[in-house]
Length: 355
Image: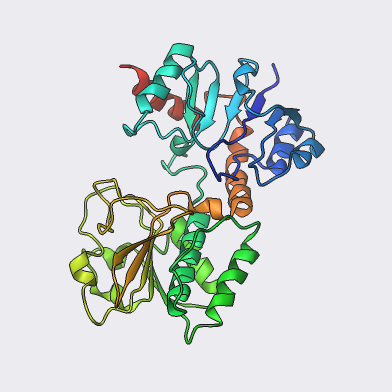
């Protein structure tokens, strides 16, 4: 049997320091008999020396098109824009199955090159649950930015200036904690979707800062919104993954009350372009460079955070967590008939049949 070969390509999306495979994960695969090639890249939170030390082959950045045809090309975010046919089997978040802009172009390249896409979003177990997700650290980072913005507003500062990634969670907690010590009181944080992956991350951040929390999940939202109770919190963190139409959690009318304490909403779910968005008070995502939208102006202003790659704020922890979930499945790539790989390939074929 030929040796299974995984080729970790360098990420090219601006500010994306996360990786689908950490040095620890690479060592696990090498110990299992796999060959692992890693592209040199300036963005990865882990150094190329860490990969070299565990036995990876080091290759030049962007050289994956020249990889052996049998290699699996592994990444996280989108491929660099180009038009040459794709001949390899790729594993990454392609964002190409829901009629996104440019989706047909990328899928056509796979069809032309007779390659295949095993989309990370569609790798699921027998219960149709994703085998690996960044949810916990999305919630953690989203809650941290929400509390950070609240504290800044208490201190008369801009809600949030441009933010950059942190080398580890302790530095992020220290940054926010330092601001809170200057405030007259600590905020009350409400998390909707508290029992999910993202919600548990938001609760984890609140506990790390010893904040009072209100934890809602399906039972509390079943009656349908909008919910006046959110106005009692200082920070609302929305972590609900919505896949059906339901009444919004908040509206501009429900937030228009003199009794509102709510000052910041961090919409971790972040779906301003979808039909099912329960936070229907904004129409575009925010970024690390421009983190907030002022939804309601002074005197009782309300700011909203809607960053769609929150785990990038903590690339080390989020990569380690994701890798621990993903590597056991990567270690089964020698058998593509296994359900997790076969189902992903079936979806790829469904989406490319009519191109």
